[in-house]
Length: 339
Image (cartoon, rainbow, N blue to C red):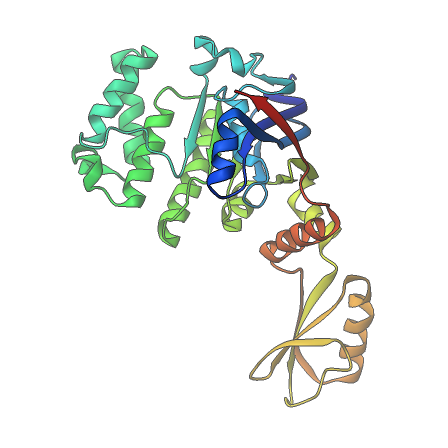
């Protein structure tokens, strides 16, 4: 089976204007402008199978959104090859655009002063959707996201969560086969985040859609994605299972010990990272966890014992911290442009 998305050696460079502060530098820049070449995406390769839901992770400025924009055809690559459903996204062919959707949590595609229903009708006209199919899909999506009569209110009167749900409906009216989600739960409360996650999972199951998701909320990724791609400084650090990410980058495990008699000093077994009543949490090296566990069970009166991997948020943060410490400053080549 051919991949839904195939990316090979993808590169995107931007020319960033630079100049020193002050009047003299401003005058000089009128005649001899300087720019710095910044590699936002630097040789990225991956493929995603049809129907797969993949998390695309990285800190701010890592190249996630730039990659999504190239996959959806909003940006032209500097170099490399992109194939989405057999199309070159940069050509922006109508047959391609009818099969994808890009949802950005910090962007608004709905008409601000009109009810969402009017924007939905505009989407129907843009995509040339048959009226009966459009109404059926619209009503199904509105029901699934529990929007009800909210779609009759001007968009400016909706809360952030309500507007985000309406944005998702608008993006899915043409039933895309590939869905690019860029921070879809940004700024939403916990309850609304759960609703959006549940909906995305249900849409993937019902439509067999391929989903590439970026999010700073790791709960989104853990709930939806078995596979993650981690990008930093425009390059891929990891591509594989979420469980494998923890096993590869988490150097420690957390052992929770509940003592029958309480009050024991466990610092000799590992680093004490928390105490709550009779429960003590220890951090130990991953390789030492079996040995420490055996010692605890043999030497102490224990009511309960748990062994946990660190939270995925901590693992991701550790990955980025290690990479930033090892990597040199992002390269940039200065060029001069005569006026």
